[in-house]
Amino acid sequence: MSKFFLAFVLSLAAFAAGENYNIPLWEPGKVPLAAGDGPLDAPFLTVFEPPPGKSNGTAVIIAPGGSNIMLMYGLEGIEVAERMNDWGTTAFVLTYRLNPRYGEAARVLDGNRAMRLVRARAKDFKIDPNKVIFAGFSAGSSMARSVAAAAGPGDPTAADPIDRLDSKPNYLLMVYSAGRPTPGEKLKEFPPTFLLAAAHDAGAANASAQLFLDMNRAGTVVEIHLYQKGRHGFGAASTSPEFSPWMDAFKHFLKVGGFFGGAK
Image (tube, rainbow, N blue to C red):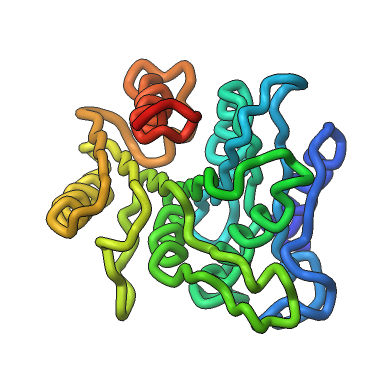
């Protein structure tokens, strides 16, 4: 058993041991571009619900990083989900398909399907289908850009009713990576976007700064935070002296946009 596969299995066991549970993105045998039918071929969402009585109808899909060869479930998944649960937001941590078995095309399908699935289950989770964030970290952030670029209103004639729904996020959070443009990308059609990186993580910071300029020129609602020190991979950073304010800054960004129900 490979180290990666072992880590993957242990992560699933950790999820199963708590109150969280998994929702497959597709039924067995219906996963597009599937290269097999094992655990690494079946993407899914892990549900993190707010405390009883605290839900405010908002939702977030979180795509952890890990260089597309693993997933950093802790700092960039569970901790972010639990912090946003405290805000009243229902969180879904996305386990997406990874290299070398899968490429970006499969991951974009996974991200868009996750958006549609959450909207399809909106009544079950008592969430507003028009208040869904897609949050990506590192490789997950790169995927977030591709997901937003490929998002669409769905196919009204699709046999699967989930595929009839819109997959465009209502807000986009991109942490560390600015991703890469894809053919036909229209930044002016991107949802309101929050960009975050550390200046010493020069590649990510400089690319995020350039993406901010490009999005701002295109007329996209966009905000950027580049911390003066630090590194790649700080995650939720709740106790970090360098980065601890970032989630509060992101929450403020959402509040200003009316995400939590306030006036814009």
